Amino acid sequence: METQITKLLGIQYPIIQAGMVWVSGWKLASAVSNSGGLGLIGSGSMKPELLREHIIKCKNATTKPFGVNIPLLRGDADELVKVTIEEGVKIVFTSAGHPRKYSQVLKENGVKLIHVVPNVKFALKAQEAGCDAVVGEGVEAGGHNGADQITTMALIPQLVDALEIPVIAAGGIADGRGILAALSLGASGVQMGTRFAATVESSAHENYKKRILQAQDNDTVLAFAKIGLMRMIKNDFAERAVKAERDGWDEEKLKELLATKRERLGIFEGDEIEGAMEAGQGVGLIKDIPTVEVLFKRLLEEYYSALNRLNQISKQ
Amino acid sequence: METQITKLLGIQYPIIQAGMVWVSGWKLASAVSNSGGLGLIGSGSMKPELLREHIIKCKNATTKPFGVNIPLLRGDADELVKVTIEEGVKIVFTSAGHPRKYSQVLKENGVKLIHVVPNVKFALKAQEAGCDAVVGEGVEAGGHNGADQITTMALIPQLVDALEIPVIAAGGIADGRGILAALSLGASGVQMGTRFAATVESSAHENYKKRILQAQDNDTVLAFAKIGLMRMIKNDFAERAVKAERDGWDEEKLKELLATKRERLGIFEGDEIEGAMEAGQGVGLIKDIPTVEVLFKRLLEEYYSALNRLNQISKQ
Image (cartoon, rainbow over all chains, first blue to last red; front, side, top):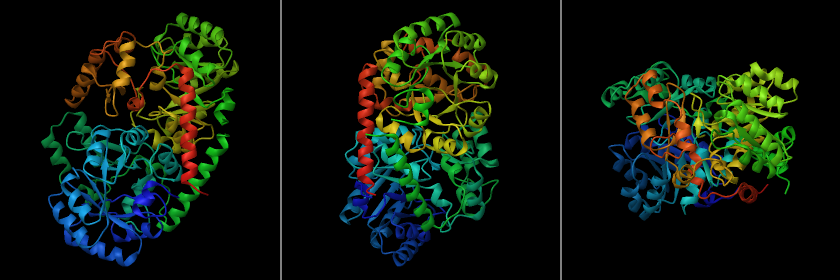
């Protein structure tokens, strides 16, 4: 397959594994890159020196391109960027913040910069800041989401029309049909999170992976609109958060409820009651925990089978 | 084009115009059917005898199949169903309620019954009740939405996997790329609302059509979670509703704010301040008010152009 994104990143398939806290270390990222996609190390749950270790291990595990995801709101984002450049990583995905601050230093070091955006306005800012592409992330995605709550189906074509740089679609994509749909909308690639969180190589806790398999279409909720939207699988914690919001709790009380380490508790320690088990609405499509290699083979089969159906429907 | 839906409904293209209050009378519905899609008369804003008039006019304006949308929560739904059968309409779309009550009488009269659903659970119930197909409507759609807030991208493949009857996709689809994406996900047709609301034949007020043209990707909001979610274009009324919700207003106070006739005020009378201007997140894609005939031609061109791009990307 060949798109603007496969050419930009030097990969075989336009399939990117999202950088996810407590899920995507070197093991998952290198497996994805070895399968022909782009693996991302999620630095959101790493101190700078731990990120360095993961980058070094990833370089040993694959000769293919891989990248690092850096959440720019982190207090030590400077350090994370520095380590990434020092270790010679050539692809950086940024999220949660403005990429302008780092675009020059990254470009000077030959790094391709891609920023995650939830609407057209931020996408135009990313393009102006010199980004090489954007990830347009719909509100169906797991984890943190933009306040406008725009969905993938509505967002992607509007980004494609507004931008000159290529668009990667994220949110609700969990199989080959979703990849085909995203490319239909004009995207040049996809980023998938939850689907890769439930693989053998994901470093998430088994309890978390098991909850992904059990969850149905209506088993995720959005909460914390006032302090930063987060999508997660329903559990005691999530339902308390939704109720708090409905009852009109203020920012301070909501921050107390969220506290810190809810993501670590849910995803890495596997606390099914008190943890934030972040996942997207595609969870209902996920029924097993394959290796990344097996998953890639299946995604491509599903993709081409759906494309053949399209061509049959659409006699030209 | 040929899908399970074109065959079921006897239409040329699997493109259905949603039944919309104050927007889709006989004029819009017959124009869509004459262009090869399926037009629906939206009975939600009609008394039974007015519905009868619209059906009679629609029969005079087209020899092609058309249908009626009936919101089942209406107090006089019995009457609307009776008029529809008496006038020999052979396609009924139901929404907002359970189709079981009417499925037998409709089927005895040779009517194809299609129900609008927001999740897998209600879709399975519709299938059990004898529906011939479902419309899976994502939360990006304009107007009333399901409480689970599942998006089109996530919902459609999960419905396709769960059901034996065909699935029509709705929500966020406003051009040919969206149609192609929906079919990629496994749908056998699409239902489009907002796009058809901004056509020459739509009976909505000019102010409302103009707001659709102005609105961007992030210009709609969801409100009234506690009493029934509604998506509309941001204005004074909509922003008051969102604020009320954040402040934790109870059901009674919210019902007072919504009152009645907000939809009539916004869509039919064109009150840009106090009316509910229902629209989906695809509004940002809508830049003109074409005739239905011109719109159909364009949708098909966009569809085939996006399909050609897919085939180029995906050398097999």
